[in-house]
Amino acid sequence: MNMTTSIGLALVATSGMAFAGPVYDISPGEFYDGLSGITSAQMSELRGSIVFDEYREFSIGGFEGDGAGPLYEGTFLTRLVRSNETGNLTFNFRFYNDNVDLDGQIKHIEITGFDGQTTRVEYRAEAGSDYVDPTSVSRDLGGDTLSFNFSQDGDADASSKFLFAMLDTQEYDLSANAPQATIYLFSGESVSIDLAPPVPTPGSLALLGTAGLLVSRRRR
Image (cartoon, rainbow, N blue to C red; front, top):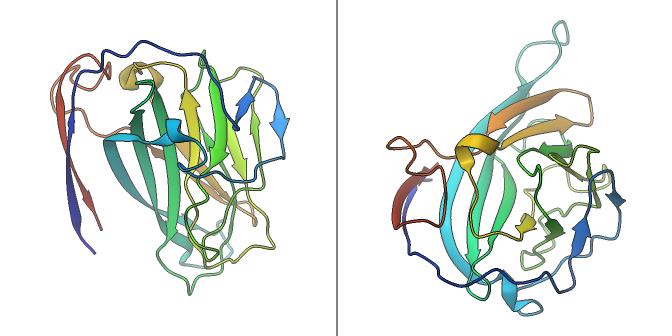
């Protein structure tokens, strides 16, 4: 399927606000297994405008000698949202299973780009029960990487709900942080993908929040 999204980003003058609300503030080196999901009706800070949607197709194949062909084919969505209340940015992530005939199942997803960021985590509970949600989340000792973990008891054919990481800043340097996701299967195979959209002109996406921005994205 094809969908083109054009998004305008206006300069937000709202000052930063302290973190509050029923989401978990995860520090470097922490593991949290209390994820339960939340909606924008329960936490209005989640409501906001989309800065960009970036869709990346990916395929995970078996280890050499395990046979030909992929074990998992999917699409990974990175959605950056600016809160209407605080002006702060939230990264939202979601994977779509594009080929339910394959046997691979996603175990966990490691996402980089959070070094030095105060970061709150949860998942969006709005999607139905046919979408899988993470069971836990951890952050490495250096603070740069979040790992969202899934249960093998879940529906292997399902796509995921939105995982999210709320930041306490209105600005994020995509060029310097170069966010990336590494997606692992329960069978051990993995693939890494870049999450930032291509920069149309030098520096135009480097520091989000400093000027108007128009981004067009295509989804399969």
